[in-house]
Amino acid sequence: MNIKILFFAGLREALGTGSASLELPAGIATVGALRDHLAARGEAWTALATTKNLRSAVNQQMVGAEAAVKPGDEVAFFPPVTGG
Amino acid sequence: MNIKILFFAGLREALGTGSASLELPAGIATVGALRDHLAARGEAWTALATTKNLRSAVNQQMVGAEAAVKPGDEVAFFPPVTGG
Amino acid sequence: MSVSVQEADFDAGAEIAALSAGRDDVGAVASFTGLVRADKQADAAAAARVGADAPPAVQAMTLEHYPGMTEKALEAIVDEARGRWDLYGVRVIHRVGRLVPGDRIVFVAVASAHRGEAFAACEFIMDYLKTRAPFWKKEETPQGGRWVDARESDDHAAGRWDAGRD
Amino acid sequence: MSVSVQEADFDAGAEIAALSAGRDDVGAVASFTGLVRADKQADAAAAARVGADAPPAVQAMTLEHYPGMTEKALEAIVDEARGRWDLYGVRVIHRVGRLVPGDRIVFVAVASAHRGEAFAACEFIMDYLKTRAPFWKKEETPQGGRWVDARESDDHAAGRWDAGRD
Image 1 (cartoon, one colour):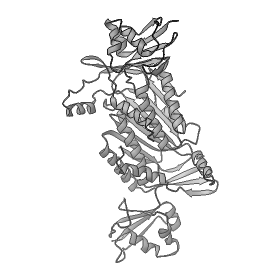
Image 2 (cartoon, rainbow over the protein chains, first blue to last red; image 1 turned 60 degrees about the vertical axis):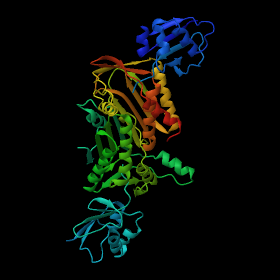
Image 3 (cartoon, chains in turn cyan, orange, brown, purple; image 1 turned 30 degrees about the vertical axis):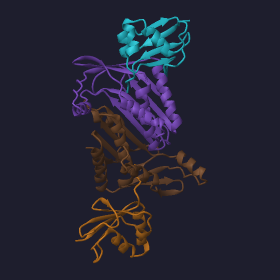
Image 4 (cartoon, one colour; image 1 turned 90 degrees about the horizontal axis):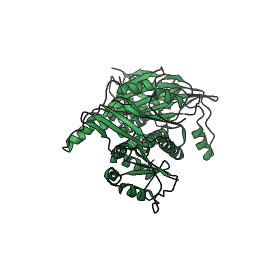
């Protein structure tokens, strides 16, 4: 079961896409590890490493880098929120 | 020149009047002294002495008992305010 | 005209909109609407906790005020708020006369660039209005008319601003 | 329905009135309306004080959000407020899409028996919304599009509630 990954705002623009889907690689069990895995693809993907104060959510709950990720999850990465 | 005295709310009802006018007696120079002078009339006027936390205003400015009163002033006595 | 004392009801939405109409520098409008309560559930519950009788239900109330001083006192409160915060607009409406439960009684709205100033000034004005503006409420209850007692909590609420909270 | 994310504008007066409609136990409705600012005078003045360039004027902005999570996050913030204070009603509206200076962007209103609870809960919801709800603003300026940076003061404002202020 794949995981669905969403990107928003400046990060979405930097990546040129709002979503991705991938099979969770062996050994990737946290949000932080997933982010590093994606950033290691290089080129535009390095935005995942360079975005200041990158935030993340798993299944639409804001979480920290240590949060667990498992197949079937919806994971999102985005810059700090600026609504209101 | 007389002073005008106004009463409000429960104090107005206790006195049976909303206003009075009198020539400032010799020796009465403060709001507190004026209040005592009126209360000393006895009967309903004692409400000026017995109203809990009686408040006062001179020329429509809230003041304490030590505030000066002079001929021509508008003086008001009333219970603590309860608007809003 | 920032202060009104009136018998008529008001339109909170129109008042809020007026504070930013035709300008593009207002980022925040904080407002407060006070209403006449009938059942005083919170007060009744508090009374029950200390073994006191619950207050009787309010059927209506009449607002008395000190014409002339009322407007001056409200304007002084608004001036005080304008001195403390950078405000773009302030509106205060207080109704007088006979009101029934559910009726609006008071309205305060404050416009500023940022929400912190708008919230603080709006709450400040309400707190000061409660202790400095010459209004008195007389409630009608099944047991007859009753002048509302001033609440110590209102003096406390107004007093905290003197200590420089903000 | 206490939370809405929508492109449409809203009527603050109708929303405030709805929170006390048909009931006589609401004594206080605190509300906040946030608007799009163009000139950012306050920010420009602050920048001038530290010798920085004033930010360019905003011509419009577009609000992006995370559909699904947005509503959940706002509902969680409302639930958190309901757990902290005795509230009779809460309404949160956040607009998305393209907005121009002067447009309303966010609305929060809280009904309670007393003003202290209503003010505190309304400010709490705004503070948490600013840091926890997935909205992002992109401003259009004469120099092009620009994603708005998160403000440290917003994290600070939200953080003060964690220390138990109220």
